[in-house]
Amino acid sequence: MSYKEEVHGDVYVLAIKGKLMGGSETAEIHDRVKELVQVGVKRIVLDLGGVKWMNSSGLGALMSSMTTIRNADGDLKLSSVAEKVESLLIITQLLKIFKTYGTIDEAVKSFHES
Image (tube, rainbow, N blue to C red; front, side, top):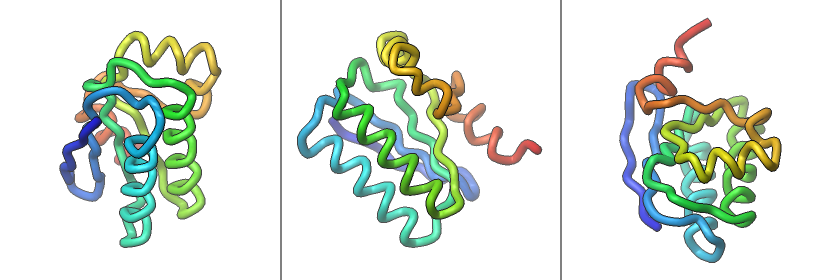
């Protein structure tokens, strides 16, 4: 697993590539979100277009990241979710918690809509 970071105005984007299957990679994502929140970032998009699969540890990292940023009065959104990952979010009913968008641009734009 690897990730690339981009800043779109006041929205921070983490583009993740690989599998989120537990271990250090899932902790790395949540740790990075915590670091961003500590420096005042309130809007984060996790681009999951490069994530082909995740297990419960990956879901846990997403949930932990969401909790961290919401506790800081921010929000986290998902973009480019692959079909298999979306199926997992549907089965676990986490699509009720996460807002998902087809592209990074749509997710970023959604932060600025009323």
